[in-house]
Amino acid sequence: MSFLVPQLYDIIDIALISLLLYMGLQFFRRSGGLQLIGVLLILMTSYFLTSIFELKMMTYILNQIKNYWFLVFVILFQPEIRAMLSRFNKRYNILNLFQKKESSVYPKVLNAVSSLTSRSKGSIIVIEGTNNLDKYIESGELIDAEISVKLILTIFDNRSLLHDGALIIRNNRIQACKVVLPLSENVEYTQEHGTRHLAAIGISEHTDATVIVTSEETGMISLAKHGIMESHLGLDELAQRLKDETK
View 1 (tube, helix red, strand yellow):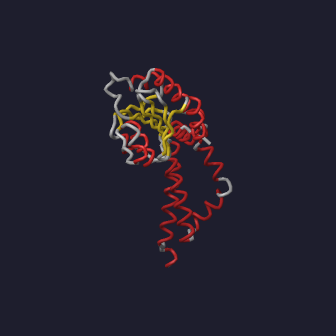
View 2 (cartoon, one colour):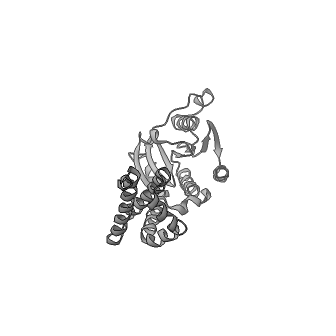
View 3 (cartoon, helix red, strand yellow):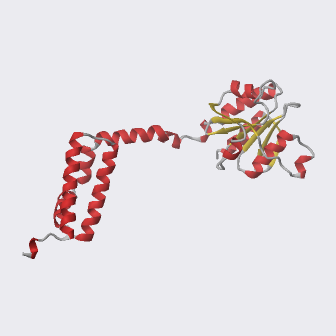
């Protein structure tokens, strides 16, 4: 009569069947994203245990549904799958992953620079590249606002408490202003430029950021990239340099 005594694999087999039945009953009572994940985990665990312990009942059941399980799964959990995809799309905005960089920040920045130079206002605008600028952002005032000419002009107005320091742009938004940047110690530049320009060169030496500087005294436009500064740029030349960054 020893064959009537259940072995360990028999107990596991029965337990898994009971769990699947329980999950099936619960499905008809309530639904949700967590339940969807739970069913996936149960199925994966079942396949794993079945292959190790050669569970007869589970093997039979899984063999019956293996050709249709994906279709049945999608039909039964259509509302949950749709809800999960909707939440993912809202959080990560999938379409934005395929937007071209040309349509992002540069036209707005060019308009702002044009207004700054016409008013002879000094400014330093840092456009973040692939290198993260968090440690510099933390030194300034967080804004996280949409780019606009009026906002940039307000920030760099001499009467504003925020005009000292740099403005950092990340992902088409003004992330922070009044940011403190490292000054370049390159002798080639220290003898010719003031603090604002040295800060622009300094951050471009440490990161791959693109930095635009307008001079308060002359209205001159300069561009710093990879530790090199180009000065006396016209607006068209600046536009071409920024366009080259998108290639």
